[in-house]
Image 1 (tube, rainbow, N blue to C red):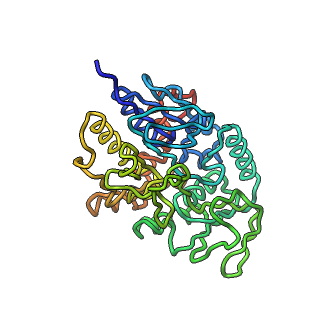
Image 2: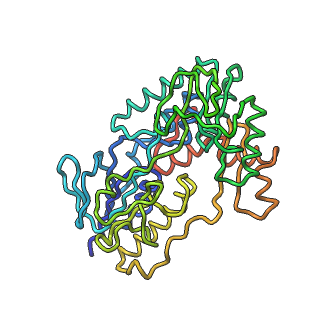
Image 3: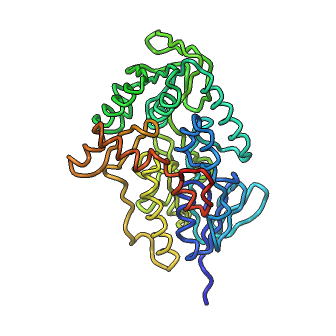
Length: 380
């Protein structure tokens, strides 16, 4: 019996785990990840006001693979025959998938190998949120919008202000979704200041003490400022290769088959937030890439030429589900007009978003996918 082709997966995030799990019985899979556990990012927002959720959303990698292996480490360099880890270990592979994702300020994401650094930062911020009287959130994308809703729901006694650079939250989405989210935030008592930025706050900053100065000279009398200005792609490993190029957003450019260096390293693939796939840096985009990469790697491992396979096609109209607390929310769905609109309407939108995502934020789904037991008392 011929030996199975070797697949090295660098990064244990959403794409890396999904592809490794799908190909575990097809290829000889090795996943390399510096953290000891998968951190389910969307749940980390609600866990700031529901601390018991933190344990359920921190999922060990132990049950992910049945035949392959997860190595805790960091890749220092890639080469044509595999990779070298920082400790000098050589891992051979026929194909390599680099999916090192993106970084965000603590405690929404963590690149720290020491899990306790992340957990301590999360608990510390949760305590500050519980004690703050006025909280300002800078950035009205998915993280900022959801965070405002979660805090306002859990802390109706606190003042919550959301700073939006655009006229509506979620400016990259259809305006009707932004209007629906504005409606929900207003119902929760969140003050949304539009057409403003905060010059002293930059992407990657952790929580700050107030007050907060805005671009028009106004001061927001907050005692706690939470930056939510977007993720930054983690491309250091691939950008070190001479044939790899980054786009204007700092994401790795690929050929139509998600290969970043098809001439020099034809067996090297990438995906997720770090890759310029045409998808936004959201889990929704990743849900399309995981199955595609699994299919194309399976075919390549079977001896098929990659350049005759079907190219990757990003979402033309990606769905977006935005809970603002466990009961309210709005969604954009790639469905015919009336059905898509239902996701943003007051009653149907709240119920649809709550049932699809808001109720447990997919914690149960990812615990099942990583082979973790359901925790007692967890809704997941």
